[in-house]
Amino acid sequence: MSWAMQRMLAVVATASVVLLFTAAAQGQAPSRWVKLAPFPEPDEELYGVAANGKMYVLGGFAGGKMGRVYEYDPATDQWTPKKPMARPVHHQAMVEYRGKIYVFGGFVNQPVSGGLAGWEPVDNAWEYDPAADSWKALAPLPDKRGSAVAAEVGGKIYVIGGAIPQPNTKETGVYPNRPARATGTNQMYDPATNRWESRSPMPTARNHAFAGVVNGKIYVIGGRVGHSFISVASNTDVVEEYDPATDSWGAIKARMPTPRSGGGYTTYGGRIYTAGGELQTPQLLAGFRALEAYEPATNTWSILPAMPLPRHGVAAAFVGNRLHLVSGNIVSGGAPDTQVSTASHDVLEVPEK
Image (cartoon, rainbow, N blue to C red):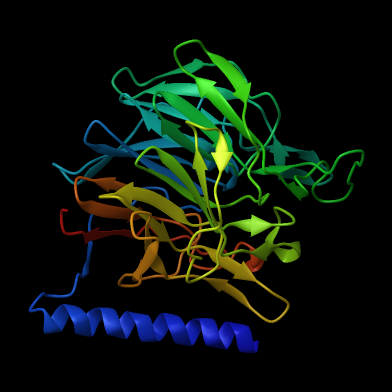
């Protein structure tokens, strides 16, 4: 393990201990994880979103399971399968707006010698109505990309970053046309007019990032630079702020304590929560247990109780003040011979602010 990695792990461990002792000193019981109904079809590359008091988990990576949609009702602690995605993809960008779920881009499987392989980006855009359990096609993205983030501010949706094929090349082998380059593309979608507009690109091109909206500004956190495939990419700790009102990107914010990519993210009480993720270096393949929260008002990070299991491709959402983390793979996606997805549905109650 490199010196930098040893130092990072030491800092995380120390901060976690400080957090627990501080809670004890203030007479508070440290937060703890509880388990609720397991996810019916464990997989990786799942995405979560809350709508109308329920949690929805979409996506997936494994073979015929791509494009699944499940609804979780916290009142009954039950999962219900819903109408699958109109075009099954993985690594889609998703956001909720006015009770509906918007899905942008992603990757699809394509024929290759010996079977199918993923990672061809698409430009599809969809609106899912949970009340009607129906899908509606929207104006497509101006370009094809996957592993972007989506955020809504003021009735407009911003789709930022992601991965695209390398221009003027045609890769061969296992993944032809695979998304070989990170992008900082920033495009705004208006649900009212079903139209797209280009906006100022993100300074740090990246994919597999975390994101959230606080006080009308969008924060893109961590992720992967240089490439979409982790074997030839690097995790970053960069946190950048985008102001839709001025179409401008600000200075770099307080850096992510644990640089990672491919995890779950969600926002509650003015904080953006980043859960899990993965890492691959020549010396290490890893899934992260880290749960950290960024608070833009103070430009600070909090290190919270680690997830019970390391996971990447985990679905995350707040329903009320309860953070739900669902399924995911307990090892890095760079370890294809040992893919182990968990059905675990872990919940952490966060004090209301």
